[in-house]
Image (cartoon, rainbow, N blue to C red):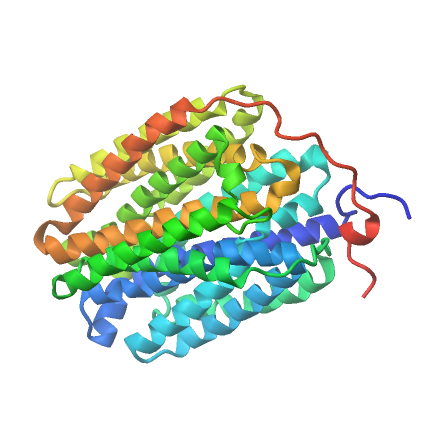
Amino acid sequence: MQPLDGLAQPQRTLAFATVALTLFVAVLDGAIANIALPPITQSLGIRPVDAIWVVNAYQLAVTMMLLPLAKLGEVVGYKRVYLCGLALFTLASGLCAVADSLGMLIFARAVQGLGAAGIMSVNIALVRFIFPRAQLGRAVGNVAVIVGVSAATGPTIAGLILAVAPWQALFLVNVPVGLLALLVGARTLPVTPASGERFDFKSAALSAATFGLVISGVNALGHSEGLVLALGQIAAGLAIGTVFVRSQLRLSAPILPVDLLARPIFALSALTSVLSFSAQMLAFVALPFFLHDTLGRSASETGLLMTPWPIATALAAFVSGRVSDHLREPGRLAAVGLAVFSAGLLSLALLPAQPADLDLVWRLVVAGLGFGMFQAPNNKILVTSAPRERAGGASGIQSTARLVGQSMGVALLAVIFGLAPDHAIGAALGLATVLAAIGVVPSALRRVEQEPDAPSEPLPAATARNPAE
């Protein structure tokens, strides 16, 4: 049988469309609930600080399970993990739509996050088998654009849905999309080689406990009555994390890809991703409360008012992703983007008490342009700085860095709401500005290294494409 580099058409297009659609929806759901928080708060009769767990439960579940599921994909094949995650995500979306209490909604969102982790953990690895090597750079850039744009378009889509339906519809729309993606993906996604090694459940548990305890502990700092417990969770998470990292250094195939993190360009790219998404999430969760509660805008008006941000992000990411293909030091373009993003966040922090719509729009445009200008080249650097055979590890770290940043952003906002409720919005936007500005430094320090590894031999056709079903 002749070797095959990537999938043949039209299977390639259909497979990537499946990856793009499900990744878009999974990332979108990490942000789409932000706009619904005020109406959910009113509908269920709960406090804003408690409603944040609707967002945080999803982010926490995804972040805890990304690295273990990325490794599981190497063990049993990326397609199996992807489709199982998609099925669970679709089921949990239906549960969110019928939730009638905060506890049930948080549980459904956590299950939904577990399914999303199955999707996000292996998407880049699947793309590597879908496309020929000659087209891999652009394909990775397209994934970066999808992630950045979907994270930013949550408010817009939520606003449009809430204009005609209650908040439950935000989750119900995922069901038909998920079922369609399952049908197409089962027939078109490539069957990738399985390592056949035993899955390391101990490392998986250590990874989940590290991220879960630290992030939930930081979030609990917003509840003054649980300060001792929160600090205990953070301390326990750091202690377990130390054991986790040390154990990974002794393994030949670790869940945490410490060999990739030892590469300066890879580690700096991951760090700047954490900082930028922390800043983005702080602003995206805080601004709806400002627009809805302070300015008295409806949920649909709130979403529509934030539309300039995702539009600017989409345009900037599309352009910067292609420009970075022609730059020797794309990290500098990412650094400029972060600087512009920080300036936009600062302008939002300095908003007057009763801003005109136009005054709000231009500030959102600046923030969106900077965010998009940064994300596309940064994610491309992160993925392409790893050897080709470590696509799974790079995919896991890329998504983990983004979600750690988003989870930390939500957790930090919970702290601000708990400690300074009367000045929460201004403090959140100010902190977001600082985080983005700090990220400029490691981004500018990056230098392109020699290509990690030469391409390996093409995989046999039996492993690169689906057998007839």
